[in-house]
Length: 487
Image 1 (cartoon, rainbow, N blue to C red):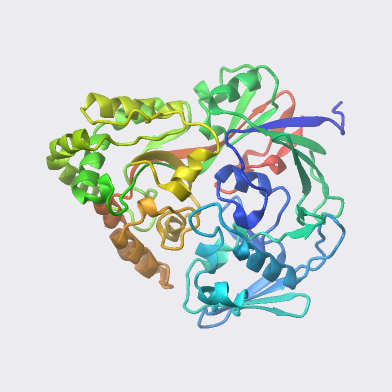
Image 2: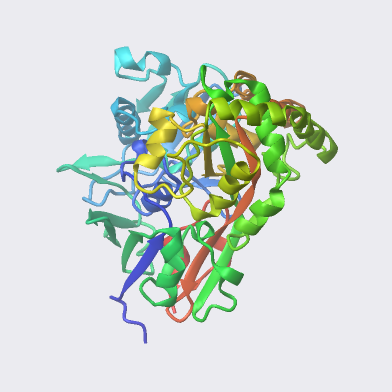
């Protein structure tokens, strides 16, 4: 019989960074904080927006005002009841914090709220209004089709600072010590106690994660798509896997900032053409990570997807510039910075093609400074990475490439892409989405903020002798401890 007080050891294949919602900027962080904090709404396993901290909501006919009715029966882990004012305080307090990312993690959701542009002077967003204990009203300066869905993100979760600790209304209370998280049930959580009563989460490197599972040191692995698991556990003893939807883009960012090597658009086109000739190498390198190759940013059947012949023709335009690009690199060697052995193939491909790289270039950078290069210092020329797919709507790309995108970087900002995304997010009539987002697709392929290699499917690995899981819960948005039950 299962011991109800047993502690379950979870690994996560990346650092989670901070536990403070509005400062969160890493995919692993979003996964971790989902256990302690709740947003107004949530996205179900079927991609449907459902109530969470808000009981209900409604837009005004012009879609410029959104009113939420807050569930005041929800309680923080100190016993205090949730109020509408807690959301306003949490968001405005978050905007006062110095962001760890290039933009505030709240920017892509709040940038179109009335008063956002004046926040530095006023320290308040006039478009966020509290009406009594249970009404939160948000006024926009222009319609944003996906505004509601952005508020489902963990970075918009409600939180309080109590005695120096950040607390929430979610199922667990998290404490951190020596780079290990301990999750214990929130005694005031209204949805009922989680099935796992005591959980520890540690960050494990992709190289060591599968071995730790086989050795029994960890019982489950979150974000297992980041780890090579041959056969995904089918022939791996007690290790089993559950898959969800496409959850991550696999990209190679190019630093196109003024004065940098890739500020030359012909260099970017050449690099894209060169790399996408060798997608078989990418597929082999990521073969044990639920990878599917795809040079287009939008998913198949998603608005904005181009015909394969058109996308291939745009990519091929760069071939005539390849020799020019290779020769230019000899005068200005490129700094290649990746953080996983899965990128060794790309490093070696460039070397074999005659591209000159700096002696500092690596395919296995480690440590927190890696993301500083993307968000703050902008030192790399070539920056391979993976990044979350935030939603099925094509406006989810705004998160990465939009002017106010929460996880964008000046390295990958391109004027044509930015303008097309700004125009696209204001479209309310969904029948108009394909045409506008095809404009975005063409701009991405021609301006090359990154080379898109493909997607990873969300995946969780676990010890089938100790845990069981509802596979239906592992979609694009549900990759956490709450999906598990004791065996």
